[in-house]
Each structure stands twice: as structure tokens, then as C-alpha cells.
Image (cartoon, rainbow, N blue to C red; front, side, top):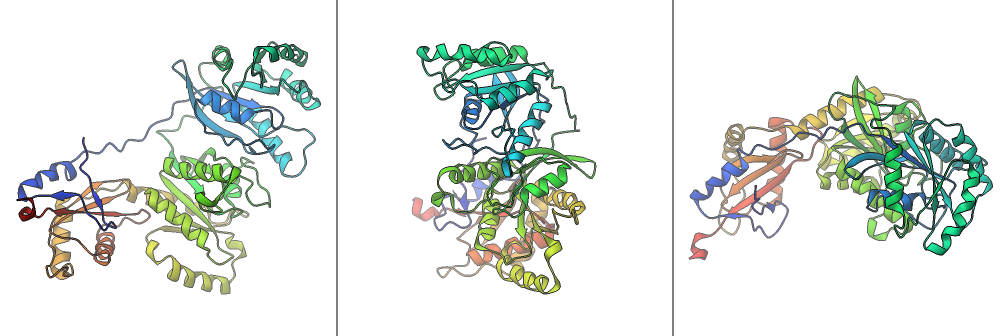
Length: 482
């Protein structure tokens, strides 16, 4: 379907026009269009884990295997911390690549958790790529990793990375000493040898994964978003029931989006833990810049976002900006006030005043008060997600909408503009996800009146938990055309 240009209700210049009553044929496009709302059902596919000590180029190799820049890359050890999954295709065959943090058996603090995540990735993968820096040779850490992998029943390929030219291939022979078979020389940065590596990897992979989940239908996609250190990774770990994401008191621990299948109320959901949005993308730099881009991409890929807010401290401008990002993306919204175990009666009263003052425009959002630390009220999360998604998917018939708009306009007509009162001739819900109300009008509708219509639309038909977009198509002046 070729889509006519629509003018957003918030735009000053409305270029989506219709000329006269004959143009009500647009109704056929907007009122009766059958929208394809089916979700993709992910097929089970084998999993490849990319492991190795810090700063050997694992994330660069992951991007090379994917054929796109997806994993965060920076010339600093320890950028990747969680195990992060990406879908890839080579020679028509799909597989999942799991990027991991640097594995160091002597690591302490947060990096000990990073190592644990890498070990878990190795234990659940169908094949393993051990990445070694060919320019450095075999280190003590490489030997420790190889010792563990020699006991594994998974196929293991040694990837000799940073072999940028033929002269450097002489250094690859040393890697035979790891006892894991023939090393494969690759330059992840330039792509040299990556095709041969992928071919061999596909030969080693089983047709189906060893561990296979078979949920009924595709899991709904949920993005966990919020400012740094608000408890997103702690919530994901609590929901999963294991240490799925690295958690540390240091803000900004999560860099890449981390996804997990979570079963809540006998339904499987795909949760994605994201990096904390600390600044605007334009003012962020380095790792934070790419982490912000990944987070925004995760929101776009999700169907519903859970915005975590620290309920124990006052609302911040960053909290409001994150909520605005979700609304701008048109995703269903659940606001989870975390750390509720730290909220006393006085703080609760202050929070209600902050919500009335700062979140008055998103009263429609689903709200839950939870504690990721104690597990308090996490059982309320799944019902809130379902209600938000039901509204996000909801479609009201054109007949009902026009009966409703007639009653509303009769009781409260649009304000006069330029000496003339606009008339709303027709209305329809053009699409779902998010619900979009299209108004065919004889003139511009003031922003305040559009907000009034949105409120009345929600009162009449629900739509709790989802943004509603109001789009205006203004009739072209026929005298001006002639």
C-alpha cells in the first residue's frame, strides 16, 4: 500500500490534505485497511559462544560474523561485560552469536561476574570460538581457558585474530599448543579469513540447538530501560532466577542490551536489559555513546518498555526524558517504581505529588511498585504488561469512532481559528501499535483541543498503557487550487 503523507497533530504545517468529499475514498485506505499485526515467531537455531581473554577483539569478530556493527567496540579492555546474543545468517543458515566479556580466572569484583557470564555462555553453547591475539601469542589466561574447553563436549575452534597480512600467519603455528586443533587465522577488523571461519563453523554446528525452548507463539518483547544504577539488571536476574546480567554498585555496568526468555504467569516473555541512559546521545561519547544507541535500538525493537524509576529518590529530568523516548518510539509503557522496600510513608506522599506534577501527561501508563532486591510485587508485572499490550493492539471500528466523535464535537466543538470554526467531518483509527486516530477536518485543530480529544478517546475506549497518536488531515482549499 502506498501511504499518503500524514500530518502529525503536533506539526505547525499540515501537508496531509484532502480536496473534497470525493476524497473520502481515503476511508478505504485508513478505515478498512487490514493491518498485519502478526508477530514473528523466532525459530530455534544453534548457538555459538565467542570467548577469550579481554581485548583480543571478540566484539569486533562478532560484528564481522554478523555483517553489521552491532556489538559495542572500543580499544579498551572490559567494554563487554554481559553475555549478549545476536541473530546471524551465513550461506542461508541462521544461528545465534553470543558475545561475552573477557574471561580471566584471576578477576576480582565486577570482572569476576563477567568471567562467570562467559563460563555460563560456554556451558550453554552448541559451539565455541576461542579468540586469541596472534600478535601476542599464547598467554597464561589463554592456556587456562583452553584447559577448560578441552574437557567440553562442544566443538571448539581456535580463532587467531589480528592476522592482518600473510606475513603475520607465521605466528599462528604457536596456537597449536593449546591442544584444540587447527587455529584459523582471521583479521576481524579487515575481514581477512572470516568467510573460511564461518564455513568451518557451520560444518561443526548441529542442525538444532541442544537446549531448545518451544514457547507457544513468539514471546512478546520487553525492554527494561532507565537511568544508570536504577536496578534493571537486578530485576532481570530476579525474573530469570539466575545471575543473567552483571550487577555492581558502580553505575553503568551494563553496556550492551542483554536478552533473556522469562516465564511469568505461564507465559514466555523476551526481556532485554539495556544500558542506563545517562545523557542525551548527542552529548555522550565513547562507550556511552554506542551504549545509548543500542538502548534506543532495543526500545525500537521491543513491543513494550518497562521504565524503571528509583522510587526512593525524587524524579529526575532523566527519568522524564526516558519516558519521552519510549512514547516517541510508540511503544506500550509500564512504569515500575523500583526499590519500594526503601519507600516510607513520607516518601510515598512526596512521590504522589511528583507524579501529579511531572507525569500528568502519562497518567495512562500502567504502574507497578516493585523491589528487584526482595522480589516484592514482581507478580504484578505480567498483568500490567498484558494490559498495556492489549491496548497497544486494540482497534476500534470506524463506525464506533464516528458515533463517538459526533457526540464529543456536538458537546464541545473545536475552537474558532482565523474567524472560522473547523469541522471534523470524519474519523478513523488508521493503525495499531501504537493506536493512531486520524481526523479529517476542514481546518487546523489547536493542540489543546487535540489533547482534549485524546483524553476523551481514552475515556471512551480505554487504551491504558499505550500512547495514542492523533493525526489531522486538513481539507485543501479548493478556491486556492483554482
